[in-house]
Image 1 (spheres, one colour):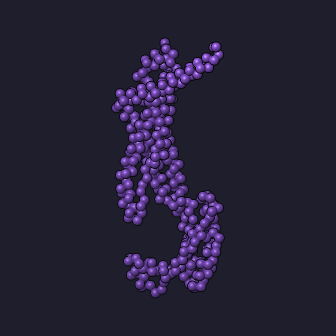
Image 2 (cartoon, helix red, strand yellow):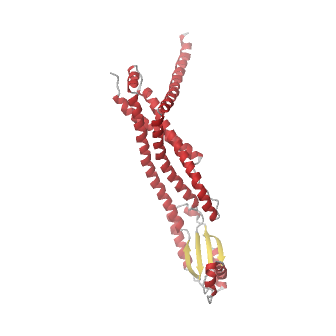
Amino acid sequence: MSRPTAAPRRHQARSNRLRGYFGHHLASLRQSLRRLWSDRLQSALTATVVAIAIAVPAALYLTVENVALLAPPLQQPARLSVYAKTAASETQLQQLQQQLQAHPQVQTVSYTSAAQGLAQLAQSASFAAALDGLPSNPLPALFELSLALESVDGDSTALAERLEHLRAELQALPVVAEVELDTLWLQRLHAMLRLARQLLAAAAALLLLGVVVVIGNSVKMAIEQRREEIVVIKWVGGTDAYVRRPFLYAGALYGVCGALLALLALLSMTAVVNVSASELATLYQSQFQLRGPQWMESLLLLLASAALGALSAYFAVSRQLHAITPE
């Protein structure tokens, strides 16, 4: 008869241990919340310092990402501007256009004749008087080429090499006077964005190290205030994990509160700056608006801050617990 009852008893004992384990987690969280609330001034100061350390790299990250939104993608079709010689005849220009359209790497060809270019320039009031005194049209015919270089696969070095090879090939045509590459500025911009992201990662690492120090010091102060209580708990058999648990929740709460304050500051700054940014975008006939932190980014920031706070508390508590032993 003892064998059938042994399994339910083991199951009941395991269930009781699990309830006790999670119950202590819940009690530790409540205890940490009460202690943070009872020392509101110190908690607010710690959370504010954490928020500043989080908000600075987050604001720089949003700045870089907003600039990246304005930059055209590097994988977009590259563009070349082909200027014909001014002495080229209409027949030669038509032959050149057909030759460009038949090129395997050319996607589209946009043609602007010399007369059309002069008419567009004459529409500007600052050039109208100067153009009236010209004996002849000095402008060349223009072919704007949109290229499709699918085999590049986003490799900026290979893209630059292929574009330069194509530019030299077109430059060698007898009717062509000059070929300008319109994507060099785009490659430089994306290179600067990559550099900015790398510098941002380094700055974020340094500032987050400050978060570890701030939360660790706050937890150390809390341990010293509860030193006698910890001695009693360890004297009656409490494990280091049992003693450590409330402090881990306190560190996580410091991280979460700091992240919430940082997100609130970022959203407020984005809303304020967006007013001026929208006015500037309207002048350029654009609907661009600055973006603030997205919900997924906010969630990741909260989770990362909580984990960083708990990790900071873990190292601080583990070092202190070794020095606290019951006599």
